[in-house]
Image 1 (cartoon, one colour):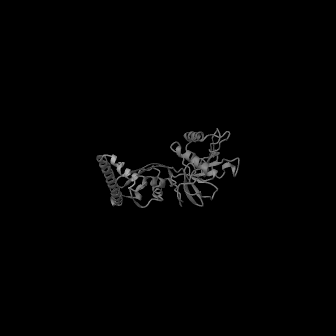
Image 2: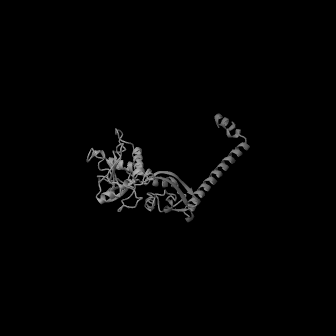
Image 3: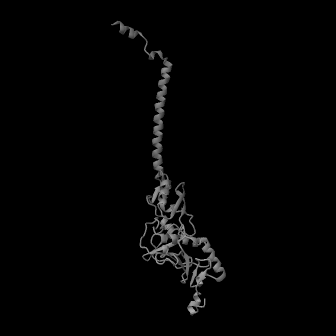
Length: 307
């Protein structure tokens, strides 16, 4: 045997320098660590399996039909509720434990043209999801090819086509425009007349408690003077045929001498206080400082044009 080999065998090994108690403790630590990791892994797998099992129980199943908000504005009728029940991407039945379900429900409602904002979506165990929405309010309907489409004050189409329009006193006015272009639900009408009419309709809606007269139509076919630059751009028409000459579009930035919508409403209110409902006259012109009006409708029927 060579000298170098004898020296190697006779020299102590590095491991021999570590006390046996320490070596035994380190080995035991790694054994315990391995057992602990194995136990945690098993428990995690069992939890996932148990959660998946529980999630599929009928007790935790949500019906999509229950997602429609239970609290809606007074103006939102059955048709609005029906439209809100259409939720793309949401199955008819699902588990309340589905990952990301609240965000998926919120995203689905955001695609609805009636929804301006999703205020909250929260779980109520075992099988309810509570939804709070801010809705866009319709202010008028636009008539296109003998069908009607509800719009908000931004001229955004809200509804599916409506075949017949209500003639009841509380019905919203119909915007009469020269257009056959129909945007998709949720899209804004790219039409200056319809945008102007929707803005006027919102003003009338906000002041309906101050006015005695209800308007059946808002004629915007002359917006921007398309038919006549000297006539009123916008006409308000009652169901009795009274025409209120509103004036120019409220959306115009520069319109010298034009009264503001608030000033026009005030003129209408004062006129009715002094002379009765606007709808009693053949026409009323509120474009100028001095309100002009035509004969009373009952006088017209009798052939009296003294006014």
